[in-house]
Length: 251
Image (cartoon, rainbow, N blue to C red; front, side, top):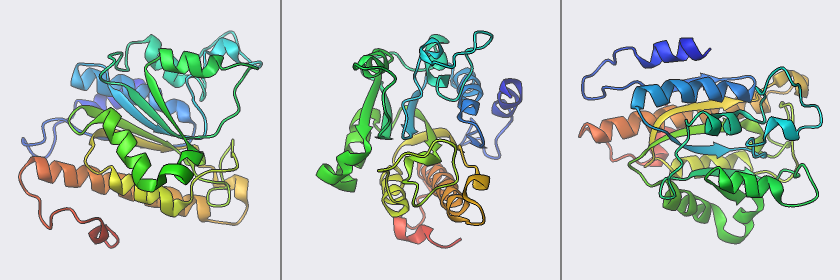
């Protein structure tokens, strides 16, 4: 997977005005984020900031897992820890990465998980903060950390949504955002300089005959792709209709 994404990252773009490709990957297990970060770090020649929407941290040292498998550190809850170990994530205090939508239980009886996460240069926004500061507060908080100029990789674990809206996933957690809230947040973040994204942990088999999870994931992918296209047009001086979010509802 790493070699395939590195090869894609080196391909020529359609326009010389957009000299570097953007990667969109779909899954499947969240561990596929790691090869994407490896590829994009090589393309951009520097560590990357990440915006990570998830119920869980996914920065756990794999040795902390009770089911730790000594033969490999590679797991869907440790890929950001591995990315940090490999120097793929920005370690600058002025270029931190962001988790949003968190509501996970911690692995121990203390705050060691959060302490380790902070040491890896992450800022955290819990899912229930939306009750206090609203959708716009979440948007403003994320933009205050990431800005709009530095390259950002955006990773969406579909379990950031409440299980009522995305039951088809491997590790659902009650208390998540609604699909509408999440789409509003994504549209409010259109100013980010996204260089790649993924939507992962979508497993429709876990919800029987329903299609809610697949529909939600498809809409999230649409929002991310159109945001990247819009930012690209703006950077090339072709703003079109001015980027109104309500113009994105129809193809």
